[in-house]
Image 1 (cartoon, rainbow, N blue to C red):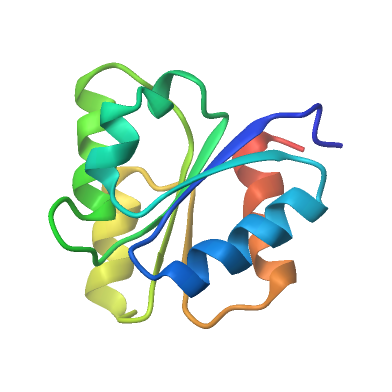
Image 2: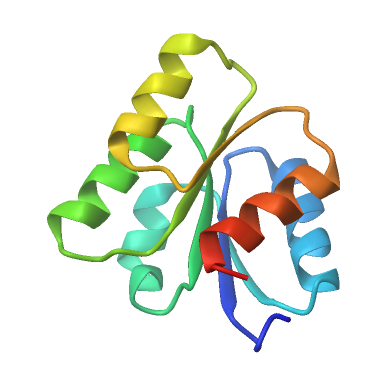
Length: 122
């Protein structure tokens, strides 16, 4: 199922990062976590990630800004965006930016699994 693909989780909330890291790892994927999009980019994570799961609202670069930056540099990694501040405007912005999936926090494990499957073409 996972083919040991690398999934990146970016969220400024440490408890959410740890929770998602555990869930994604339990699915058989390799996982890397970052507290912000800037750290992810500085580490060159975009070159290795098969999929990125990112919060939208973070200090500094937002998840949508990250998705735009990845597109600008030609990197076509699927990005799953999530937010605790979901509304139609946020969903529309995420969709227009090219998000592979949009999740409203809190979400259940199966919703994330479905998004990962969709993003990775499983």
